[in-house]
Length: 199
Image (cartoon, rainbow, N blue to C red):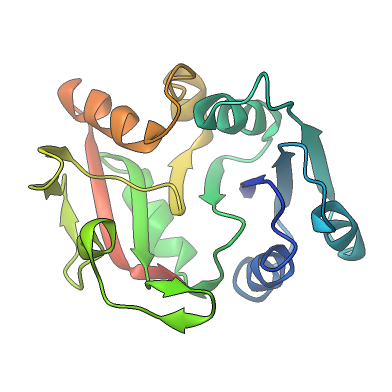
């Protein structure tokens, strides 16, 4: 029922933890790694997860943009629901039924809470981190960015909606925020769910 898309570039320190957390919380979903010319052991580590059917897509640095990498991954997804998770993130809490119920309703994107961890240590919430609040809400407005906030560190969608409304491939960053604001402007709703959590 679920496809997982992970962008990666030189994530040997984290990718194993990311994949293991997917196993722990989701089981054996379809997993697609979109790798941007990693030169470390990212891909060899991915290959050790033999019990997963992991599809690996390569994208060169000359072709890369965050949106394009995600769109390439989504195009290979075969399941009804899509999860995007950052290669450096590890799932700490996930209720798939709750998320799917939202996506079956009037919500087109759900983004989860990210615990601020850097180099293995919990850090204080500043700037971006301050947006990962304890209270869930629809169409969260970020005062510091003066726009709606959304984050692809841990986000969920219906595949058919992402295929119809892909990420903009022209931006060098924050493709998630641009996508969410376009969706809300078009009359759709985005939901921040603090119960779905990564670190």
